[in-house]
Amino acid sequence: ATSNTITHARWAMFKRPYFSRNGEMCRNPTEVNMSQIVLPCHANYCGELSAGQLLKWMDSTASERHAGRSCITASVDDIHFITTIGVGQVVNIAAKVNRAFTSSMEAGILVSCEDLFSNRQWKVCHAFATFVAQHTEAGKVQLKQVIPRTQAEQMEYSLAAERRRMRLIHAEIINDLLSSCCSQTVSERLDYQDAVPAERTRVESVELVLPPHANHQVSTFGGQIMAWMENVATISASRLCNAHPTLRSIDMFHFRGPSHIGDRLVLKAIVNNAFKKSMEVGVCAEAYQGGEPLRHINTAFMTFEVLDNDRKPCTLPRIRPEPVDGKRRFQEAIAREKIRLDRKYIISCKQSEVPLSVPWDPCNQMYLSYNNVSALKMLAARNNWVLTSEKNKVSLYTLEENQMLCFKVETHVAVAAEQVFLLLSDLRRRKAWDHHYQECDVITDSDEDDTIYRVVTPSVTKRGKVQDFILLASRRRPCDSGDPYLIALRSVTLPAYPPTEDYNRGEVLCAGFSIWEEENTFTKISYYNQATPGVLPYISTDIAGLSSSFYCTFASCSAFLEENKESLASLPTSTL
Image (cartoon, rainbow, N blue to C red; front, side, top):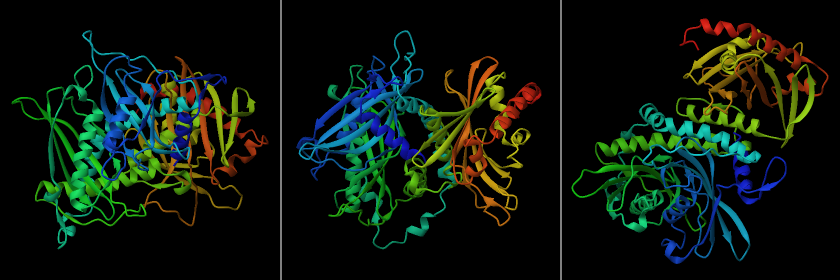
């Protein structure tokens, strides 16, 4: 729900000069900019920049400067194309490394379009690509760390760890969801008299990898492979609709292996399913050289639309899948469409367009968890907090922006960071130190990182109803030694736990703990809350400086941590 802020921050970050925390102007040393005017040779039959050509430019802009050596494209996250680009317009591509891990790094890529005659500039898309530095004779490469200099860079640096986590489990999660989320049977949609046979949309092409298609290490550019895949996908989509389709999005994908100069790349595309106003095309890329067997390079799923004269999506023909594998692809496309909509709804939508509570189900669990942690990381990355009060080393900070009040409470404890994390992770134990937690029960224990609780808090007024919350708690251990432990909280809705007359249902937009290890047995704890109407009455007097309950609560928290740190050693590992 907070990703609209992320998007605006990212857009502003590329448009304006960088200023460090002390106000000095600086330039990110990993940043690369490319400007290209769109010529007829870059355009498709509609006079618009070919999406494949754009993908090639994006790939070539983003790699190698930070690594200082040859890199290969490992994966690309979801790309949503907002607008098309016409002949004569200028494409501006800005790329920079957000974070380097061991031998891989994440690059953020922002594409904008510029009209030289009207002096207008607008966003086309943004993407995150992962590149891997190729090994040397000495072995695996250790990339140098990226040092964030600004608030925006710190935010992207922190979020990169969460995006990496999602990439690593993406394929496994998608496979699980495809097997469990396909609620609509194929037979319901097979009896169309006017349906287009899927085999009519099948396209196969072979490309020879030549030196211009590869880097100096003779590996094929990932952007070149994506361009060839987009080409066959467009032909396949055209055969269904007998019109000129427009590429709207590409799902996250990974390159399974490299291809080299001299390889033949076999590219296969087919329309998996046609929805009312969009279609999914599946594309597979395989490589071979000589008489060797085919090597699977990549599989991608691309979504196309057909636009009318008013640039509105047209209704598409129905499709009749092929037997056996065609039915499987048809069914999986239905599930992917639902997953795609969930992902876009949770991660990409504007804050003003979604409710505070998002319905939870297994299909959107990964994205809600990502959004939950990302929102907390964004809040923690802000550098304009104002110190409101301080008492016995418990500090209260506030931040008021966009008609939203946020607060942060910070303190230190003589307890190891991991012990603090384990003690605060289980919200059921919060009753021992926070008087606002009257009841706390586990509803769903999704996995070791995500748990859903029902929390009951006292009434704001003497005669009012008590309040309850349905909270998703997402826990994260540090990705690197310099990262904090995180416990992020946000509201979700569950059909089995609707609001009742006996309770006022409250909602939490973003809250949680950031736990920093400063020494082996000394830890900084920061608690954040983006105060919603349901939370504000509990803390309004504290913010105004009229109450010391913040101090009392966190003094009680410190005492709780001190008293219980030794108890963790006796607990079974499975409990921890």
